[in-house]
Amino acid sequence: SNLDPHVLVIFGASGDLAQRKLVPAVFELFRGGYLPEKFALLGASRTDFTDEAFRNKVIFENEHFKSDGAKEEEIKAFSEKLFYQDLATYDGEKDIKALADRLKKLDKELGVGRNYIFYLSTPPKLYSTIPAALAKAGLNNNQDAWARLIVEKPFGYNEQSAIKLNREIQEHFPENTIYRIDHYLGKETVQNLLVTRFANGFFEPLWNRNYVQSVQITAAETVGVGSRGGYYDESGAMRDMVQNHLLQVLAHVAMEPPIRADAPSIRNEKLKLFQSLRPITKKDVKTHVVRGQYTEGITSEGKEVAYRDSPGVPEKSKTETYVAMKFFIDNWRWAGVPFFVRTGKCLPLKLTEVVITFKNPPQAIFAEYDDYAMSCDNQLIIRIQPDEGMALEFGMKVPGEGFRVKNVDMDFFYRDLTKNDVPEAYTRLLLDCMKGEPTLYARGDSVEAAWAFVDPILEAWEKDEVPLYSYPAGSWGPLQADALWSGGLGNGWRNPT
Ligand code: BG6
Image (cartoon, rainbow, N blue to C red; front, side):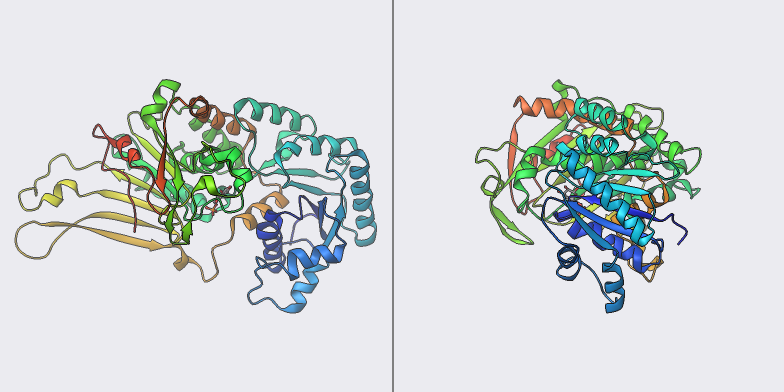
């Protein structure tokens, strides 16, 4: 490994994310030989663990710890890199002092040095106070060493709070040391959107208003809120999925070519894209956005209780578990092209995909042979997950008399590219941060711009100016979402089976 020695400090280490994603991701890096020889992971949270109890929880007794094919010695060697520091509160002066002492001790004993990544996987209200406490203890900038901060989502609650949070953190950590994580950017297929567009000569010339009829992005989930009701009810689908993950996917689909594939160039283009979203004003919300909440039903996961009956969710909750929206991008490339985005819990499939629908040829000259020829969709379907890959659909002549046309597809599966599993998002993102490579993290200004776009919608919902529709768990969401396509905008949502 050519990475600098460092310590990864995870605040909130006894929580769900550390167990499900972070520790398994660091293990992947360890196994792949990416971690520097001198490395430690220091878990920090309020639970009173010894190092050993922590290792048991996140490694040996962790059902999410994927060790397929790993040797016992390997797991043991990894476990010896994990340590734990308990904190009475996360941001108390005494606590951070104890943390600083512990870091010093680790350096003394293991020579892991004084480069730090601080990972905030805590309740969001601590996102501004922990950096301030770290600064007080001098942990934000030691001479000859670096300190980086990874901040989990949600980054802010609306534009105003995101601006405030940016300011507060930037007081102690310069922007180029702040890594706002959006795990969708760590997905191979989301990164591949850039390669598909900008490494090929034949997609990009068609990628504009002259040839594209519509663009739709769907992120469907089969699960309900499960035990996350407390968090989710404060959040809802718009804050949980659209403001961050789906707008980031949109940016990769729609941004202008960056002048180089580096962080400033790519992030500048993303910001520009967010700035060119035509605002959905309060009066447009009714016609451009549909919100829904699931009621009882059967999904592929089994019987699901109504959202309102889920633990942690108030009986009269008006939080959306589904959102579908239509909007436009007011720039040279996309003028007039409708974009559709939807996401929801308790839908029939777990799948994220982007569909680019191309315009029909100017004349339907085979229409007399086949009605189908009239509606033959030229679509590029980009499967973000599962079955990562891409299909191009187009019409071919049916063998035999006349000129009947049938839709066929050319299908590429990402897994054919590699013998290994497609890397997990968190693995890639953590490695990037260890390298000091921020391209796949969100920059402060673009997070604010993304909030600015969704804010008026959230406000209209809060004032209850538009209906909240219900949909049975296991369905494709409220039927009202189909109406977003009316007025000749296209053939509607693609609901794969
Ligand atoms: C998380 C959301 O950020 O993303 C969850 O908080 C959601 O509600 C999850 O289920 C979806 O991620 P993925 O990678 O499973 O598509």
